[in-house]
Image (tube, rainbow, N blue to C red; front, side, top):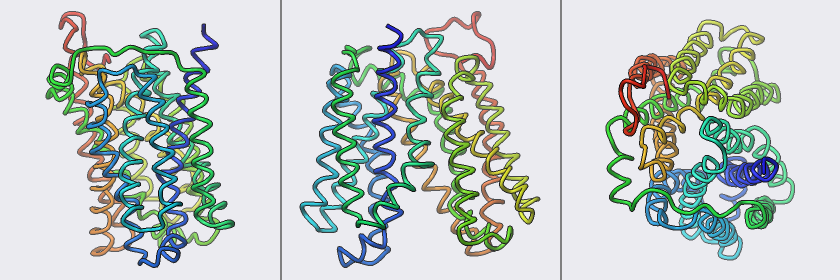
Length: 394
């Protein structure tokens, strides 16, 4: 039984990994797409925005619409639609169609991740739910650290269409593996209206605010980390990839290992990890001119950020109680909105005050996030008795 459960979790990890590669792959082949479709780089960049909006808005909507369906059936259907959404741009080389396909792909990725969490948590004992979440969500971190660079290499070698063909083939593999290894998981909880009452409760929204603040802080700095490394650290060329790889690999390790901390105390983990991320931004600003220290700080930063993600997800689902199935789609939306807001804030900062300004902006947001995370530690799940709960118990 344990082997079958691990195989199902590995399949969910792989599905999330494939979708994560598809989400970020466009960044590495943006110039090729722009040239092929005869549009500007800025216009091609809307493919990234379209995917993020599809995930942030479409993911929760699709989760609500499919909430009464068997989870395995939803996962299978999602992978079919995802493969088709990535095939369409190859068959219809039109920018508008491409944008629409990216919106659809983002929406079904949001659905797959949400349903994957519910499925993974249903397959393990309650005391291992955090670890199940960490296995699944680490697919995103691994795709950013390894899958995207490899996909970009393929795209730059054989064209952007070659990368998309690879995504489609891997999607089919994930589909076959899901059919073979993921068991049927009947719907849980009530309908959309009943679940929404719990999923959008103030206690859940408070943790989603932490989600938003953390990733706004991270991406305010991370979006413009290359100019910082160039202008402050004095790093350029191929060496930059080493620093980015340090962050990416550490982020993947943190996401994979963070489930154990979520199982022990998700609320306490959020406080420690948020404070750690803030400390890393401060260290990055103070020691930005010392390259070895910057590499270490970026690795620590990646560990803290990746390590808190399972706790963020687990805390939202836990606080939503009977609305957990619907709430499982909301952290991804909060993260994407935070990424967009952080990138915008960092862009304003670097335009007005120089390459260090995005790091300072991220630090300010992170400082706000720390007490917010601490305050959410006192929130209680709806089905738990107050006498059985203490602050910092998930």
